[in-house]
Length: 271
Image (cartoon, rainbow, N blue to C red; front, top):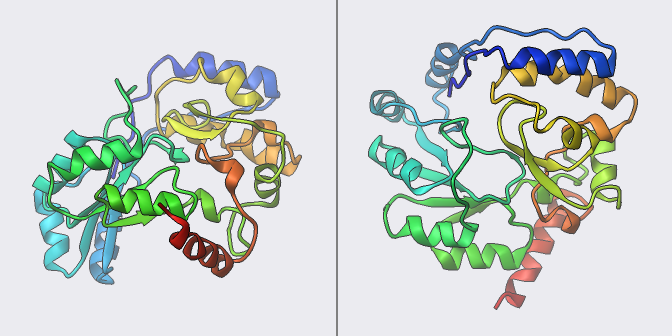
């Protein structure tokens, strides 16, 4: 979904501080619509069977147009009001993101949330109010987690962090190494790298700049890209955006097949 925040003067002090600290020239890019219309034309042209949206919910008209073209629509939500809107606008299913999820919060608005429910409580609450399928995501790392989510009312689950250290994962080598090390002990929600709340490993960059970063996405994201690229080049995880859920310490190494086998093997052990 197009979700560019208006550029505010609050970004300039942040830019100047980063340039001073990293001795680098940064650029403030004007907000764009992320080729929204072009993307819609592409998924229509190729009749993509499943289309998933995040950071917002398309209008009834757009969803109906895509469904008439043969696509199933999934909208990522984080609370009851978002889930209700997604169902009202015609979504075929929701991806329900819990607070423990790694990466960006999928909230429709780039604002601080008043309260957080655990994923299981969130599933319970929303299952009572909507009828479309729920794909649960966020902090699910093993077979027991899958079992609990399905018992709570989810129709399916989605795992991300659990597969970061697989051989097939596109995560860079430094990313994988720090997930398997004792260098980081916790995750945190931060706007430091992108201007939108995202959960990642709590490193030096976040500790220093979290309170300085304005809620301006994706401008902050594009502005900090050179810093993150240089950090990767220098193999410095303290200035990289290392997205991971709160259970990252339980990530396992292996192939995707091996991780699936592990998840399945745990299933009979689930209470």
